[in-house]
Image (cartoon, rainbow, N blue to C red; front, side, top):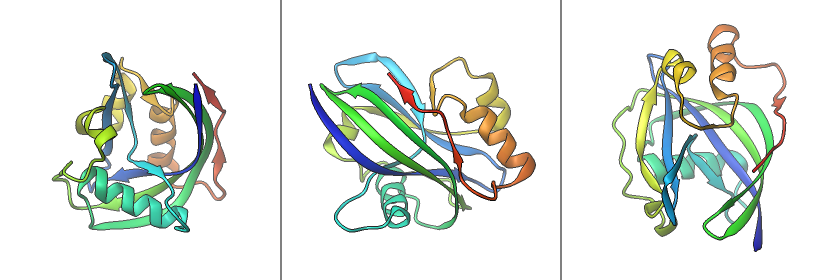
Length: 162
């Protein structure tokens, strides 16, 4: 199995009601295998993580009216997807927007084959969810973020290997 090593920028996007936007993804060869995750993706060329975060957010959600905030969390993860293993060094940035209407017209071909849609979640909805969400502690991390604000220095999350 081919391994893709990627530097990734992800966005914890909050609306004025503190809802978080998540993407509903699935394995292209197994649409019953689903999960939720934050917008974001791999760096292209010599772009910074911040530039990648904003570009990926625009491509995946159509949202461009964004105030990018601080780096919240860092995580290493490794997982199989679409016949490859992905080893990712992920940075999660806080962002705020008033633009809650989404548009998935900028999805790549692979994303079109693996994204079921987008949804805004309240912290309570996320805490009660029985579905798979990545990172796995997102509900707890979001609650802490909303209660205490961004951490002084980015939190290093436990690695997740699937």
